[in-house]
Image (spheres, helix red, strand yellow):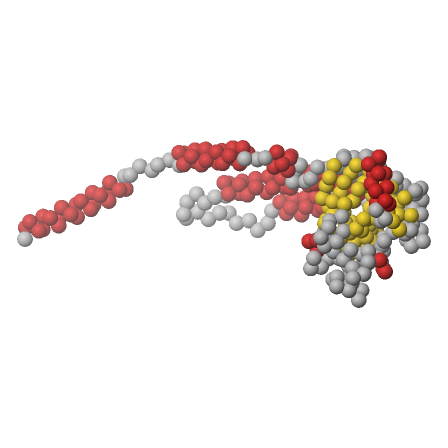
Length: 324
């Protein structure tokens, strides 16, 4: 019995000693963990940057915007760039205030109750006036860029564009242009036209001469479409029953992608087209090739009786979109 009692006493003493020793375990500093975190973040950052391709680097440099290929494009890009700057400045201010509040007003003991503040007049004035001023500045610069993008002056070339489910028709004028023509029926800019049109199996190509101010007269034969080329950094709706006018001046030769930006129906994804910016000589040759192929018309194909199928250039009872 005595041995058992001694054993129990020893066990209790061991537990107490262990508990005492446990309380005396030194606290490890968080510095090594923070250092390891920094090294890991640096390694991940270097790995990501090393894996960037030339296209990725261009996207980063352009802030995810395409290269500008028109005279009007840089205005939109500058608005986008400074919007990023304003957003980052706002973020830094907000994050700074959050960090200041976390550090300055943190609880320092379990029984501490922070001083209660019902309102702070300077802070309330700041977060009321600052957003209003930001909205005013954004509104001013947005209107300024919009005025540049929608400015209408005397064009060098006028192209009649028709959007129809589910492709595009491009009408090019032949001969001398009437610059002040409205684009309405019986008041077209040219006396004759050549055209190209796409369908469900063929994406049309819009050919434009470089360094010429191009006017697009935009129409729709059915529902609202939207004519847009990402590299132009502008776009505009094509609305049934009216003519919308958009002007650009291409400055860089090359091939670019275009599409409809308006959800126009079940096959909206087919509303694609290519854009080819070429020299004036190549543009003239392209119009001659269309004429030799028999794709000519006295007036542009803008809808009505001309748009009775998907291609907008004929009628086939077996084709979706037929008038029959």
